[in-house]
Length: 263
Image 1 (spheres, rainbow, N blue to C red):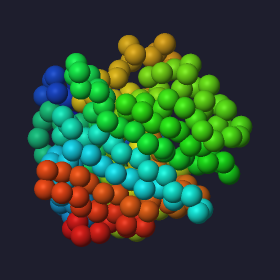
Image 2 (cartoon, helix red, strand yellow):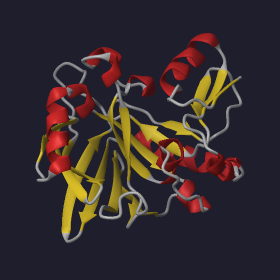
Image 3 (spheres, rainbow, N blue to C red):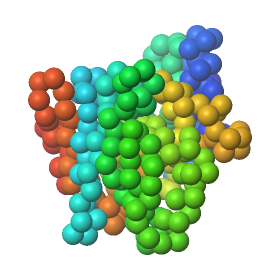
Image 4 (cartoon, rainbow, N blue to C red):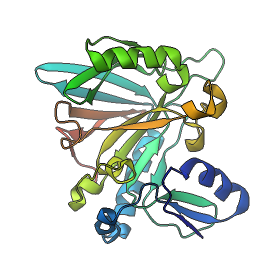
């Protein structure tokens, strides 16, 4: 059993090592004393909730997300075909598993279009707040292909997605649950991403996706960056709705940032 309270994230290599060597690992990158409170909550209940979310995304073919920025709305559809979810509930009873502590999320890699003749159907617009500016990405075939907003951060992100195409990959849809347990963000992704919905750019191979270090121009450019959609982190961007589409129909699981009819 390995505990890794490291400065930089060891999640990706330890996930691979756990599967290969039959061990267990808790990755705790950037761990701070302020996170201790989040280790004292009821992880049996946390685990139950993320397992329920995993059942939902395992059956899903798509997720439809509506963002609200002031009076504007933006729609993003994530293609969840050919994928299953991962439940990270903070319990590690068996060897072969590595995951975060603190924990409390279900995550899934959107389909990245690796099957011949079957492109990814991920498309739409995705707003992300940088400082006081909201950057809007246009997404097509699971990649950020354009930045449609104007501003200093928009220009920097526009240059970044063209300079490093692997960064533009939509690598994860995450559904965190810890906000319901009274946990507040502390400015560290290890904890903050577990509070609510988040969408990541970049590397996905450690989660079962196709984009890995070899797809980046150099090792120093390899990233997996989570954009966390809770008011304390992105106050200008609200999650108006998250709907899950599966063979049985459409089910709304988040309304105005709050989980509905899931637990």
